[in-house]
Length: 164
Image (cartoon, rainbow, N blue to C red; front, side):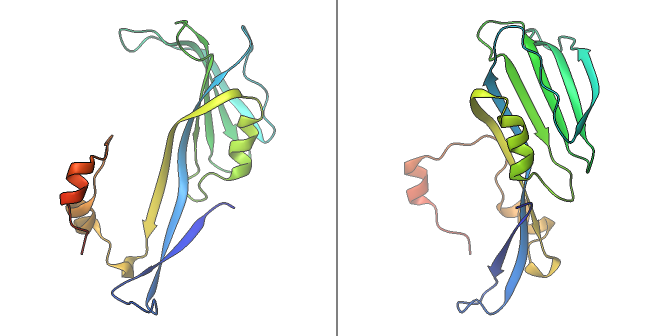
């Protein structure tokens, strides 16, 4: 499944005025164990664009090399960081960036995960596209959305009222 389409009932308890919403995976980051010295694999359906040394951009060096893949069928990109420079880092950090039109599919993520052992998801980003007639516009998002890292607090949640 490449894209999820949900329906939004706008001011209609019966659900008769359904407005489409497209939800798709936009970016995934994965940390994984790998045997010492193992390089990233060749991936079916992807070509290697670059495999290069990574310069340290902060005070803490993380990975020495990064391999960039490009899908042969769409604009999906994979950035595979390896040769860790600190012992506390996982040997591989993989970032999969979706094609804007199609999003990430299960098959694209599985193409990476089948080479990863003891992996965990670090980041999962979704893209939500609302139909123009849904009433969700830039003003609505700026008024109601919360972005960034956040944690729910039980005390604050009990004091909040639902959006109207």
